[in-house]
Length: 244
Image (cartoon, rainbow, N blue to C red; front, side, top):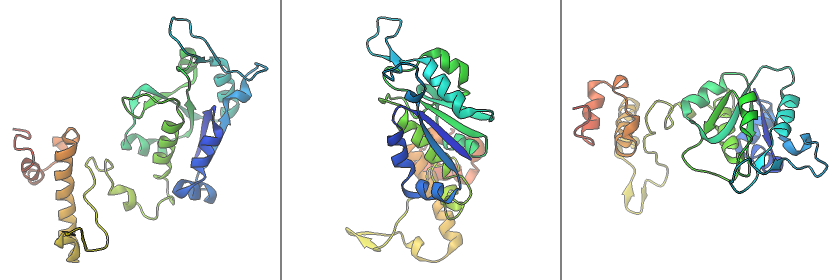
């Protein structure tokens, strides 16, 4: 897979893509990631890529042409999926990360200033994605979050598939609590079940804890069609009126 990020700050993008698990996967050639400076595609001698909006709103807006020229140069003849990161997009989910990891090469466009001329988004974006109901100064952080979430789904990035299959959101539930040494910390003991070595009981405990944690923190994630009667009984210990 190849991921291209169109940005005004390629150095910022490169610094993250070169570190940790993502950096090692990139170095091994599991995926390819390139950052492209949109300023390189402006015809303005001062390398300007912004101008005032046609409204009374203050601030500057990124122009359509430099973004379009950059996108066309990067895309070439390839069949790619183009993402524009914006608070107005659809919320990004683990399910979408998995889908993108199995799809085409991706181009991610990072806006800045007060936003981007709407016409270029209409022209080249296949999808608009949001990380949540908040506004950042630029699209670089969301682009990197999307890249990280997608890349870690690729074969060979993590040591085993269960490294992500057990995680929050992948199965539709939050991840169960986890513990490491020491066995006792601040008078708090690791649950005895985890010390038993009984794998079947441990798996059952983990599932129950995932249900309880999701009911406590994200009840909106609970879907009746994915639950059996035993699951519902566990949830009702936390949410007595669940599905009543």
